Amino acid sequence: MKLSSPPTRYAFTSVIAAAMKYGPTRVSRIAYELDMPVETCRYYLKRFHNAGFRFFPVVDYWALGLQPCILFVRFSKNLDPQKRENILRWLDTVYTIYRASLESELEFFLKLVPPKGETNTMEKMMYMLLESGVVESFELSEVVGGYYRPEWIKTYDFAKDRWGDEIDIEIPKIPYLNGGDKHFDLSDLLIISELEVDPTVKMLKISQTYGVSPQLISYHREKHVEGCRLINGYVPIRRVKHEELAIHIIRYLNSVGLEHVRYIHQVYHLNHASILRLHTPLDYEPAPAYPDYHIKSMSVRIFTIPTEHFVGDGWRRVDTFVQELEKILKKVEGLES
Image (cartoon, rainbow, N blue to C red; front, side, top):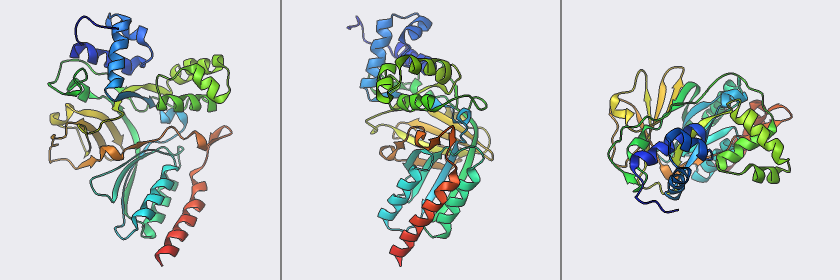
């Protein structure tokens, strides 16, 4: 389709904001809410994806019986880099959904989602790594609340694929945790994992992948995944071309200053503090009053919901990973000696 005029920033960003609430495949709903032609909305969403962006579903892990956690970890400088990578790859399999390196090659930021009530076992394994000399320090905290509100999209010109002046538009606030345990089964988890890979995936493709009827897949998505709010919404993220985007992780005790609001992406509430994630231009410098960690954009690894640990009708206990870690540490200690 050809438009008679180039897309305006306000209209383009309005479509992105609406897709956060209704999902990138609900083009008719987006068009209705914005009083905009369906083909225009579809065109803007295509431009959005072609610019290297995508939408990522906000999964309500709490509703799935999982406890979101934040982990900062610093490895020992005496540990061989290959052994460090092996430990990280193992950690990736223990309910990790996000991993990125910080400015130091020894420091990492991870998001974990162990089953509820099992954070202490995760902490026990981190202490095993600490006592073995593999890890120099760590901090593991439970996420008790928070939200996505990507204010940075008000400053990014998606039509020209570059940072620009801020426009006046309201951005949806999507809760990170939305309620108590919900009814779900493996079919729901498989749908969520496929949506995390591609939020525009057709239900027919999912049914063919897993050998389940399209009607059953559509039912689970409509009644459970979206109807029961196992997914709270969708957020825009960079899929490719990270060169012009910087990611900052800032820890603060009370409220965040106005200087941060412009580039907010997400806020995590912990028991003792909050973590603010910013998406900014490369030359942006956060206020020095707050501890700032810079994530290396190209190191970011995002993992789908850990369906491989859902056995029968429940999640695999974290203590089953302890023996695995003991074997890994014996190999590391044997090689070091």
